[in-house]
Image (cartoon, rainbow, N blue to C red):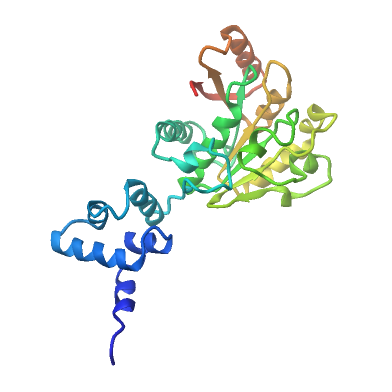
Length: 292
């Protein structure tokens, strides 16, 4: 029986860098054959052979390696989410490295596998200090590590089209406010295309009574239910100086990560807010100085 040479090549490179690049349209079959020929002649790894032939660049090889090692990230031409999700598009950038460093510390200090240590509020004293940016990019790196991650936008003061909803380009949804008011269920949570381990619960419509909604037993019930499905639950909050919402959220979560921004955060305000959290029994697991 005559063998199909194309089929034998395809079978030999199944799940290889070459097959991934071919399947993603980054190279064509003819280019693949040239790379394989060059690889055999030079006895070099596939990636080095492909780059030497100028068939692909380093970003293409990084993409293929991420697929091999189940490390999901998005291509530059992906329009499904905002480019501000740096860790989703450029996981090997400085921002990506910094977020992974924060993730490592949080894994040591809080996300230890204990079912009671699965929720963490992202808080700061003032406005515009980067809570949504940090929360969203942290959620991505946790998901990239293989942790089933849920990002909850508990800033019920912001406009629906802002912050988390804008970053993930989410459609209209009942969101957290809808669940807390009894108008929706967990179907309001949405998975992020291209990042299969990440789910997002948007804030939903701006209610007239955000503090009262967050103070209801339903919010604690949501977190307990999510802890049965997700390994990591990160919660974005409004600024602590203007509203008591962040203290309520952090108290329900049990722990908080405190943010401050270079040349913006006022130390007395941040210290006073941290003291209020600790007086309320919140475990402050760490702090981040945001310079973005």
